[in-house]
Length: 438
Image (tube, rainbow, N blue to C red; front, side):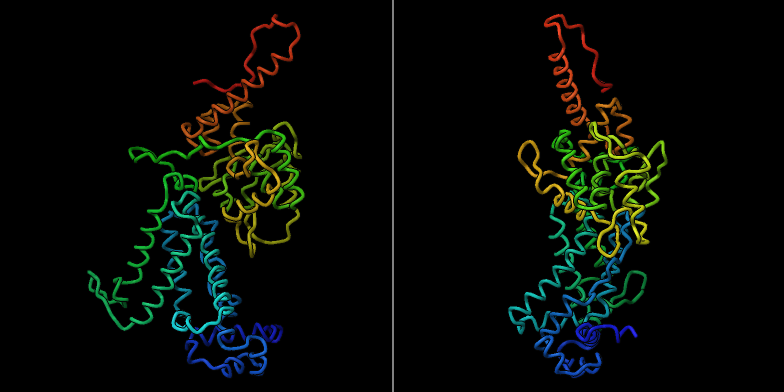
């Protein structure tokens, strides 16, 4: 019944994918594809022009990799190294039945027309972008290479391994314990290949990336990594923040809820994939978010820089949750109802703020939402120690933001002094906030 509901084109793509994967492109005839799809061979040529046109369609329309090989919500509960191993292992498992297809794509690349090559490239870009989102979730946003570049290199390694392993599958290797396993001749076994790739990926992470990805902070005698570069975080003035909120509201319920969480709770982009529906705890007197792998409790403010955005129980986030019809546990959704990735958070932020500039004239960055929330909490009187507990940032990382809060407090106090009547008869001023000096 499902096959009957599919279009002829989709049946042809599915049939070609099955045959190309099992016997290669060269050994597959268009008649075989048409017969398996249950359509006339003429229809195949009308739809795709040639077998290579059909191959290009397979690369862009068939699900070459599963939509989510590893649950992103579980990232925070799994050590990064193990999560990377699981991810690469499942990618290779997905490629195992496609070895003939991989070799065909490589071996017949010179026969593709320009249009077919472009279509193949689009298919590879789709796979690369899919991998980039997940790798960025694991590695954080502070890698020494851009996520897309890392994903492209990983994809090349995986495809190369699949091609080499498929052509040398007859060789055997014996490990130290006497176990004989199939090997490619370049690596003793698959686990050794995965370990090499994981080691390289981990070497790309900066200390700041470890923290932004939600990694555990060091304790005891373990070496202390460099702090996040919060010195370059710039908080935003109230008019711009309210302009952002207005733009987010126009963008739709989810963008509005996401921006509200970023500005109202100081959640980092790397922490968004770990948020679930059960992370939001609220009643008429409070709204708490459980953030990060260790579920630190963070208040979601109803007041943001002097303007109220609903109540604890009725605000942009609760409206988004109550208006949803999906069954995904994720608090914010990406494609196919999967948890929203850090990359998508930044993309959505860029879309919402596209027509809004910082006072310096530069585009707004998503980390400015976190900086703005931290500075506002300090101006409200929260100590840096308490803010450290709420934000997940160390006291040292907060120091530049404390200085920004003190500067804003001093400016506000100076403005009040100027507005006071009596000229020089000004009594000593009371500090505007409870920002601690120590």
